[in-house]
Amino acid sequence: MDKIMQGEMDRLGVEREFRRRHGRITFDCFELKSSGKGRVYCSKGRLLGRAKDGSMDELSILRGITSGACKDCPDYND
Image 1 (tube, rainbow, N blue to C red):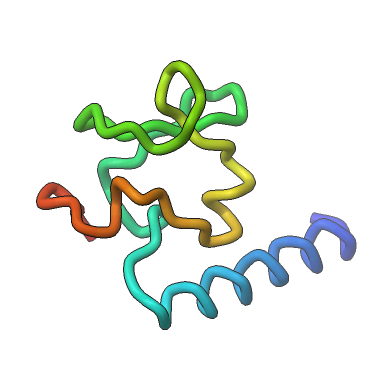
Image 2: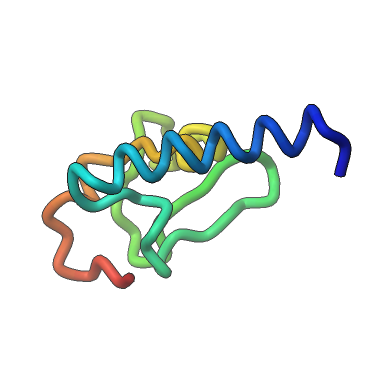
């Protein structure tokens, strides 16, 4: 991995840790699945974002952004 990519991954990790201190983050849930096309979705069918298919952008998840659906989800699995 080159230094630029490593720096970006480190920055994303710092952002996730900051948000994790404030509560649940979507990144930590084992129900999160990747579409393989830069989008992620909930395997339990919760709507994560405003996209028609209920998915969220993968980069947002890596940054530690949390979907409103995850905050009080009874199926949140970490």
